[in-house]
Image 1 (tube, rainbow, N blue to C red):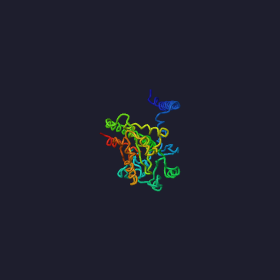
Image 2 (cartoon, rainbow, N blue to C red):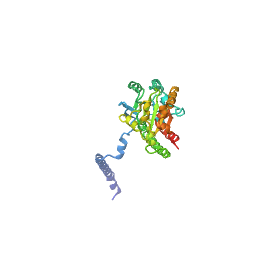
Image 3 (cartoon, helix red, strand yellow):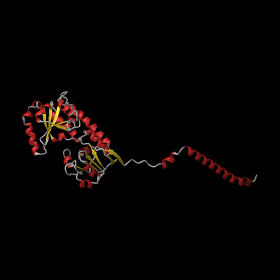
Image 4 (tube, rainbow, N blue to C red):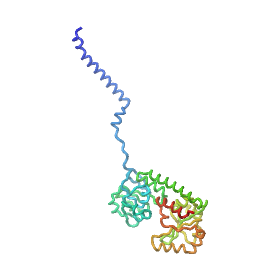
Length: 333
């Protein structure tokens, strides 16, 4: 059979066969596509999911504030110590308050926003170009509103216990794990320090803390200030009369009492916070501890009354940590 006979029909035939195969493949592909999506196609056409850059937060005034999820330039008015505990450096804070706890070295790179009374200087705050402002709840609503025009401003409860406040602030700066780490480390240290004083503190011993304020008014403290140290860390009990005084007002910082009534509120141990910010305050404290009323307190007679510096009444995490060491030094054998 001649070779030319075979060549003539071969090319058209192969072309038709290839076309049929391709058509069949296309139909099969279309049918499969109508039943399920190809993972490759889904991945390439789906938009990338990005993390949100803002969030909403309801603050201590009940205001709903839109804040950045990861703020970079924070003004922490009255919360410098908390920022330091969280290993965050704010761009601005109130030096008058911050220096109760922090040293000049710790405040390097942080601007003083000063201001009148409790209110930061608005012009200075604006110049720092903050993306988040954190303030205590004792500012007035109009003052909060003025700050809110500069940057998102969140009111945080200043009277909340230290751990609650630290957690709130850590959450607001987008680093909640830092608060938990700090608290775990503090609790471990508190356990260690308490063991060092096991032989010095008897089971059931009571302790009370007082302060003679600048207005010459005498106050007994509730649990908020020295409480975490006296009652939680070292296991003292609250004197019955003090517990009764604050039974219906557990969030009160302190309550005024007359010096003549102090013997009813004292415990087995007495801590007097001495104001040293003015010469007049120091004179009044000295006058108090030399008075017959003070000298006749059983704890004073037993050598278990302590006059301590003003920082003992400061309410921040760095002070709580510092007080663990101070208590061991003061009460240790």
